[in-house]
Length: 192
Length: 163
Image 1: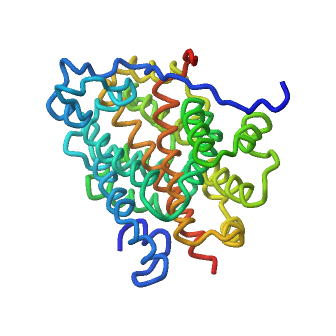
Image 2 (image 1 turned 120 degrees about the vertical axis):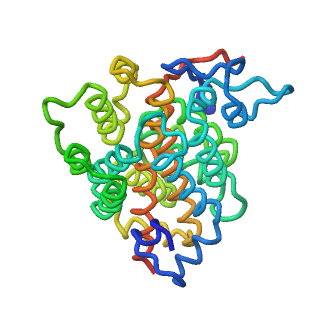
């Protein structure tokens, strides 16, 4: 089917441990999950992490700041950092979510297709390649990150503030992948 | 100046120091997360000493000796024992160590080095060794935090070297 746009399927996530039950949760867990009488639907992922509400609340705030803070690095490129980390760590659920967000924000399904079909060694335009290479090394073997990789990002017009944002978006997925991929698994969902 | 600045070679008043402060939610948020995984109020019987020892060990496996030393110091303050110091140093556990500790260590090593290889069996191993669900989550968040922190430090340090 020529001309068909590459699509990444939506997945659902199921935990390997029993998540917190909203009806028996502690006050602190309910507050962490932001459960209110009008909002009792909480995802299995949130209910799984709510076993430790203290770390869940702090990490969620940091995560949201890194992925959604105004200004700085383009949101699409933060999603690309997230996608590259998720590809390195083979977190198929995170990869699926952030591949789709990247396409929504950038319209560049060809980049996602390349990553899914040929991997992070595939061929990309030069700036995308610079971002992919840097985030791949940072995710895989942080001790092997080089200043040349960062200089290449600068050469493609990224400011130092942009690069600070990129570092954080890849790094926070080094965190998120280590939760999502180790604590549960992804399953296909029906998409109509 | 915080731990991230110090370990990334970022001096107060430098360009990168000021750029970091344009994102106060990243700077403060990282320190708050550090507290919740290293020195939490509710630790679910995973002591601050064990947490510091595991953090030092993971930092070593990530190739960041300076970060590891920071956690060695935290361990010393929390009260190091030969067993915990051995964990921090990255060594094997003595033969008499219990399966609770042995399984925690195995998990921390695995999730740090090869998270892509993790399966349901690894969580079942934690359950079989007697970890509660809160302990499994607390351990997972600690492991993931150190992996995050090491990457932020390495990235910022490299950025500090370019014009």
